Structure formats: structure tokens, C-alpha cells
Image (cartoon, rainbow, N blue to C red):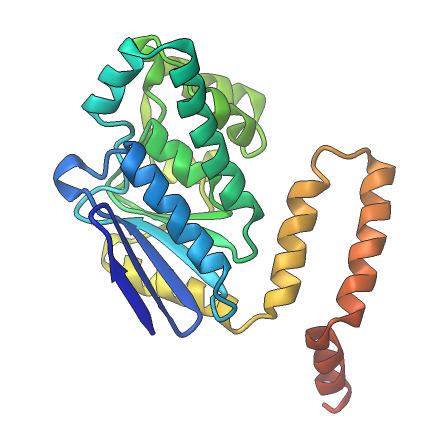
Length: 256
């Protein structure tokens, strides 16, 4: 078991599960440069630990994440083009990191997941949300655009829903988010932690190599033509067949 307390991020890994917790409860886990950097470090740490099968991302206190904090917004309003570019690229790196690390990343959403916080949840491989939670992209209210999130949201929900969510700035219930395809499932508040742990346990008990390869296939074939995706699938199929997990699994199946 390993644990570490960071001023803005908590990290704990045990029994195959890495729990990363945004730790600014007094600020509703609002995002700033320090938190984003610490979150990247935690994700890389989980990826470099061969014992980690799944990452659970959550927020301390009553909310998942309320988006950028006031200081970050003030910084945007006075930054140069070069400074804004670096800031945007940092966000892009975070989204790419979630997609490219080997373990699946599950967002466990309680309370509010708004603006960049909703984008962070959307970027994860799966999202579980408590029934009382609220999700939304209110950026247009201040003339901002959830630009990079669009690349992810567009792949999760229909074109019409994506347009509505990003231009009306309204927040939606967990139930509506599930219906739209924004999240995987709604969980009753009093059973939330138990359900998150149960989902994490399914990944602990599943072949890590198969899950990682499936994750790579899902995201890398997205921009390919149908034929190229099939060819990539052939290569992945062969890799899976040659893996120890697959060979052991076939052997167990044949012995039944």
C-alpha cells in the first residue's frame, strides 16, 4: 500500500486500485496550475505502478470540481497570447494523459462537476455520478469556450446534445447526463462509495493487458477509416493471443 498527501491532490494505491482525490474542498476543488500539475504527476505515478489496475478520480468534500478558480480566471484575462497558449496546452496534455495511460480512469462524481470540472470527468474512461450531482458547461456565460472538451464531448453524445450543453450553459442532473450518454450510470447517494469500489474491483479481477489493449483500440481507431481500423484490430488480436493472460485464460477455460 502506498499513500501520499499533496497540498492539492491526495494519492493512495492499494490492492490494485489507485485513488486520486482533488483536495481543495474549501474551493470546491477548483482547478489551478498547481492542481493540474499535481494531477498529472499522480496519473503518471499510477501508470508507472505495475500493480495498479484502475484509477479512481474523485473530489474531496461535497463537490467533484467546480472548474477554474477565480485566480486562474483573473490570470486568463491578463495573460499574453503565449501564456494562454501554454495554459491551454497544459489542459490538452492532461486530457491526452488520461486517454493514454494504461489503467482505465474512472471519474467518481459527487456534487457539482462544472466547466473544467465537467470536462475533466468527461475525459475519463468511465463516469459514475451520484444521483444528487449536477454537471454542466457554463463557460459561455463569461464569453469562454470549452474548446478542447469539445473533442471529447463530441465523441460521447450526439451533435445536438453537445451543442445544447455547450451553448445554453445549463447544468443537468445525473439522470439526464446518463440519458445523454455523458456518464455511464447514476448511483444512489447512500450507495455511491460501495458502487465505485465494486466497479474498481471488476478491473482488479480482469486481465490488465486485455483492458489496456482494449482502451488503446477504442481511442486509436476513432480517427481511422473502417479498413484501417480492421487492420489495427488484426494486430491487436495477435498481440492479445500471445499474451500470458490470454494463454492462461484459454487454458483455464479448456479445463472446465
